[in-house]
Image (cartoon, rainbow, N blue to C red; front, side, top):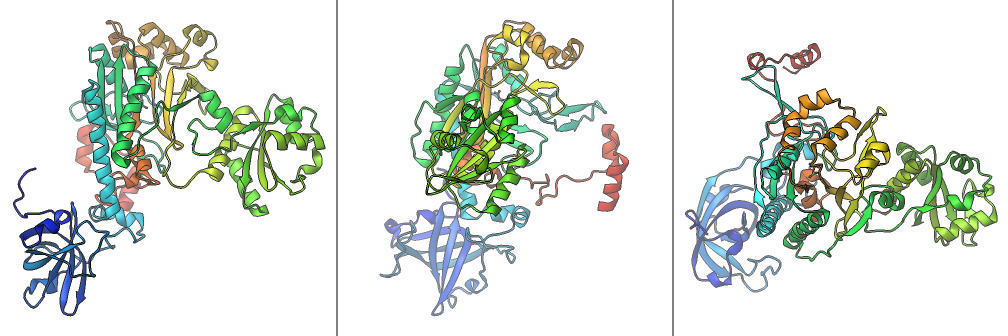
Amino acid sequence: MVQQVMRTHGAGSVSVDDVGNEVTVAGWVQKRRDHGGIAFLDIRDASGLVQVVADPAQHPAVDDLRMEFCVRISGEVTNRPEGTENTELPTGLVEIDAREVEVLSPAKALPFMIDDRTDVDELIRLRHRYLDLRRPRMAANLKARSRATAAIRRTLDQEGFLEVETPTLINSTPEGARDMLVPSRLRSGEFYALPQSPQLFKQLLMISGVERYFQIARCYRDEDFRADRQLEFTQLDLEGAFWDREAVFETIEKVLSSVVEELRGERVETPFVRLTWHEAMNRFGIDKPDMRFGMEIVDLTDYLGDTEFGVFKSAIESAGTVRGINAGQQDWSRARADELTEQAKGLGAKGLVWMVVNDDGTLRSPIAKFLSDNEIESIKKVMDAGPGDVLLVAADRWKTAVEVLGGLRNELGRPDNHDELAFLWVTDFPLFEEAEDGSITFSHHPFTSPVDIDEMRVRPEAAISNAYDAVLNGVELGSGSIRIHDPDVQRQVFEILGIDSETAERRFGWFLEALEYGTPPHGGFAFGIDRLVMVLQNEASIREVIPFPKTQSGVDPLTGAPTWVEAGQLSELGVGLTPEAKARQTADE
Ligand code: ASP
């Protein structure tokens, strides 16, 4: 380690071995207590905390010390008097008897306390993020992040991967989100896109002969914010040539295990569990199932073939399905039933059927009277339902029914911490899906290969892709695929996506040409580092593990970004504001 200039010890490293020695520490005043005319100061630096005892009569500077003053203190290390030791603190057996106290920098009155107990409004925390990051939990999150990326680099270096940086001012890479654009001054009126991912560059690197590539890459997607989404995020991006899905899985499992081991000291069981997309949807109603709990979706259709209940009957007659989950013992009330019905409607259901099993085996449910004894018995049997269990049933098209139940399953069963970890691979995604406007779009990205090219040509809507996702505790960590390496197949995919050959040449001609020069079969993966660290640190939002995040409305309360710029700057770029934007600007200024 580089020699310290301003101090001899980190605050957290002072120990009984130093008793009798003179030491110098430098850091912040975390706490101050006064007892019998003597000041007890907790001095904190990046390494931890140490207690300093100072007599204000001898050190007048002590009188002025307030919370978070930055100080340097020299003195002799002594054993704490018997009975005052703190065994929970690594330095809790000793204290420093101050000989010299120097204020390096005073601090204004604080907007919030620097501890983990205070519940502070997030806007105020972000406005003073530099103070927020002094809080132990945030400091621990920053450290965890750094150790996570160090573990990733170590593991991939051992596996022979090359770390390569790719540009961030690029042409658009379609990943399904809106691009963030940067105007060019030298070619005014033209724009760069910020990468939604380094997808096409990593594929070019495979053509370049880099057989194992990775990058800890910043990606930008102009999407709506959520707890696990920001405009910019960081992912481990990886690609390999002459390998298959199994090799990708093994590599990613090694990388993820190394991060878990580094942050939690736990071993991860590999290989991870695998589900096909169809199985995940069928059993859990979502493509990122949380495998820490059961409550699986059960198909009731076969048992209700002759049902008199109109909702079930019409669903079955129109090739739909009736499915349910046994939500177990729940606090059940009319209000709770209404609340869940509203949620089910929000997820696309027309309604929700609920049933509670009575002690005598009968059902309490608004629809009980429409069900025959046989139907009730069958439902209870296939749903493994006993007295007190709440059963929720949806009747609809397959996708809607399972998605509704999947949403309710998460709501009712999902643990609210990440103490336990459940990794999962989801494989065999559909190659295409229906866009909101009814057109066909890609499920992963347009460079993903189909499992069966002929099937793709004939029935694109049923084609399965070589794409896969990694899921941890119901959080989608990332996605990857084996890519198309044949330019003709790539052209066909563009065509199915409704990109005519002229547009394909204009937008991706450069890439299609690159594919013509001996492209090796290749594939890869990318996972979100923010999301991974969020789960491993038991946080509920990625903002807790991003040093300087934006708010839900895309604003940085600390620096004020985004901001208006000078009119001159805009004209230099060949960019103008719409009348609406101008009106907003006038109102703002
Ligand atoms: N480019 C993809 C993404 O960012 C990952 C991949 O296919 O490797 O989601």
